[in-house]
Length: 81
Image 1 (tube, rainbow, N blue to C red):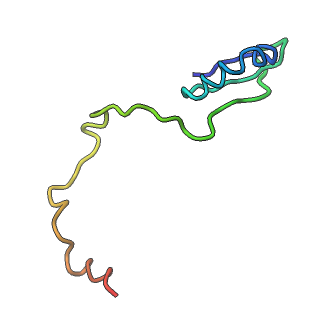
Image 2 (cartoon, rainbow, N blue to C red; image 1 turned 180 degrees about the horizontal axis):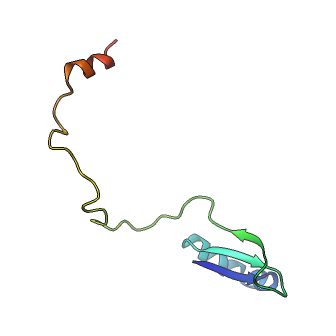
């Protein structure tokens, strides 16, 4: 989600905006008189840690039944000096 604020609002709510950024939000700072004209963006430098939801990719990934079997000799020989 993107939060739009004016420069005075950004000055007044800076700490709260930074908390929102740390929660994954994007902040657009807009001109005072027209909130449709963004002039700056505040985003997290590193992606925020999101909670993993177990099973969310169920059915999207297929693991071959022979996954743990040894590689064939012709392929294995490519890895040996």
